[in-house]
Length: 249
Image (cartoon, rainbow, N blue to C red; front, side, top):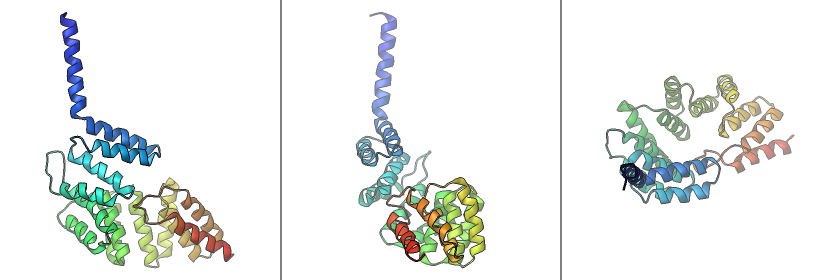
């Protein structure tokens, strides 16, 4: 065997073992691309196949989040829960604590979800996702003044995070500060957000102002946006409000 052929064989073996060692991650990336194309059932199947192979904690957390978005609550919780105590050089277990708050929320443990995230803030941990989750949970809890503090702080931390902007706008609605809410949503909708809440909440402002035609148009747009198990609104809720406006016209 020539030296050139031996080198090629060696390189092929190295590539094979590298691919085998990282097969879970490779399969996960493929699943994410499939999910992005809207083939959700196929993507979830690919995620489950990926999880059969060794995978770093960050990639396992990503896998769990995709499962959670599609309503596989028990499966996602089983993956996320132990990741809250895993520590490596490139992984912070606080990330899993943030994602676990979504599990707590969906389990109906809203107060525990808030306590979990407030604890992370007290420890000095900050991410846009933490602010987005906590800001919404506080609104759901009815703690509007605290929600206002957290959402303002969150927007200072990451002014480009649209979910935080939406949370702040919704907080102003809950507090009856309609002009401030309108200012938030006029800015937010210039970026054409992909989630329905922004359009629905701006529609609430127009309803308050008696501008039902504008509200109907926004609700129609909201119905076309992306929904998942983690959505705070359902397409049916939005359709129901739009139909109510039509019937009352």
